[in-house]
Image (cartoon, rainbow, N blue to C red; front, side):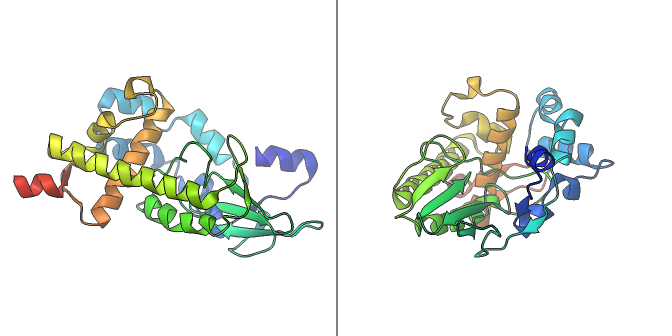
Length: 254
């Protein structure tokens, strides 16, 4: 909506450089993008008929491609160029590569965006167009938010709250539990695709109730956790297609 707000009001749009560089208009190739996206879904083991439903569609991509370029770039620690308040940028990659929180210094308020939410956890998903590990970046940058424990948090979803350090602790525990659950699934299934693992995980509404784009989001989250486990030597990855992961416990017992 920022482009529409800018057009209607004359406001400027600011981003971290990493956010600008990851805009779909800069990363999506119209000639190769659709096939690359479908190939990623297939490499995750998504059945052909499901992949046809989850693949990037023209209407969806057009919406993303219309996201505006920034007028101003904000690096970590920069002050937002406006009068009346001191808003300092806090770079917290994970949900997106250039995600920014904003700290209002006089009132000690932290606008946490999608980085820290009071009740649910943000989507931290592996993307089809990049191999960059989002979960590692997210877990590291959670510590930045915990540093503002005395501040009141104003998130992008739900409600304002206090206790950022405790909330960060709970979110870290959630990801610890999720990685352990994935290892348990792999120990039970043996070599499995990201899609097969996704189907076996506990989702808040139950897998049967997860539909449409939310299934793609769930797959992205699972893939991010699998890649995180791979980087830490907890799982291995086969070289075929679709890609299959094996947990260290399963491999040791084979």
